[in-house]
Length: 276
Image (cartoon, rainbow, N blue to C red; front, side, top):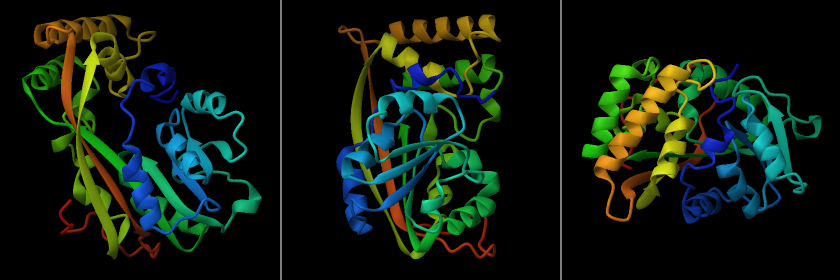
């Protein structure tokens, strides 16, 4: 069972990406509405929607049952294809072999950080000569509320401390600039950053917490799940405003450029990266 199975409804509560960041990056990459993009780790379709709005044909690869939510969501769009698979093993329609103009990911690169070389080489096998890439990531700015939640998860959440990505993503190695910059050719990569404030009520924040892969499953680990969710809701009540909401500062980063060549000879983590 995939860690994200049964989390589709909760995942939908995650904040959307800023549309203009994506469209600016696609224009910078000189992508056209006629191009075909392979989206890796497409989830329930947060990024997919924006790629389709641009006019792209999107081959959406997702290993969990969240892809069923996306299939229902984009059922009537002839430019959407849902593919069960992962970043290395995917079966795209024959007519698209060798014709992928660009790759896109949203908040998912950390899942194949230990298979970096294999992933990049697999992408080159299905792409045009010099494919482009678009990658988005966001994290929450630390505050007292998040620090207390982080401490609670560190103590009581079994899977939390083993994750390359935690709730306070600023310090997570899986979301670092080094992690993202290494996918792009050094002479053609750009990162644009935007800060936005997001206000959430208790239900919205609870759903976001439920969407994280490190959270216990309510069916297989009901006691751990219920304990953690009660602790999270108690902390929310402690810090909520008079309107019953929490405001979090979210930092979005949009990387774009030419995908690094699949020579099998590149470093696992590059030493220096451009400022974001």
